[in-house]
Image: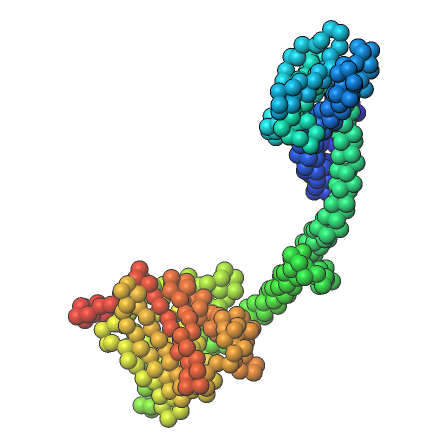
Length: 478
């Protein structure tokens, strides 16, 4: 493998690894912070260098003032300037007197720096100018002379020694920055790896393991006791995995139930077909009561056969296909009581639906919805049902109210879930689920309007495309 290929492979690994990216970013940000510290540090070092030379130059001028003759030999001046590290030194007092120490051949200043009026930005710019420049300029430095700020000291300095000391200081700062950045990056990396990367890898591994076999309950993640965002993510993932596990188990049970229902419906259709043949003979009976009851019995058997057929279709394909037609609601409600096979003393049905109100829907499926709701009310202990309907804007709203004891909280929480929403022992909870699915197939909805100790109210809606009212023209329509 060539060097280029290896570099490319390492680059790809770094891009894919969260840990590596965290390490690189940590080092980068620490270095940025060190740079922000380095810039003012270099400027301050340069300022201190000048101040020390000014102080040394001021002390050198005091040697001249201490001389009885007011002057000193040139060789002593050279030694003092060498000690100061300057080409020349001057002292300008407030009374106008001037004291100077210069070499035999005085140097000419190339640039003047006034420390009596310090400026941070100018100091930073000057520091980098010294670091990046070449050659040896002579700098004229002006600043306060000792404790007396009225006097001004002057030194003439070579820039080359200053540049060398600045570079030496900068390299020391760089070495210290690298050490600090590596230590800080390592500590931050280990902390993030322990607190974030490792738990994320654990969560990811659990998701991948659960994906391979979601029906295995042992693969649900065991949430830790952490109270931060990672702990919350683990607990929510555990809830999600358990929900998926339960849903898959329920789907398997429903599949088995669907197979059983298919077999039962097949046999039940044969039984009902036999009963249909026997009932046909009752229409020719000599007894008036038998002839009067026979059509209703035939209708019930036909409806049961149709229900079995559509249930088989539903188990294979989902919601049965709708056959919409336009019909009045009141006659459909009148069939509810006989369909329940309950005497009027045990159940009273009040119909508060306008006689002219008609809907456009699948009559048998809408009847099935009403029967499910009515049967649930009777089984819950209701003795009175009230059907009411009205047109609201472009929607037909139908309400079915009973005087039963109301739904318990558990049934209300899982009202439309199969096998969960039953309010009575032994119930499957399929009735309301099927009723809601049929209403949605019509483009409508079935909801629980209210449920108290005085009774329960269900609300059905049919939207405008499949529901409209008819008035006087119903005689020509039916």
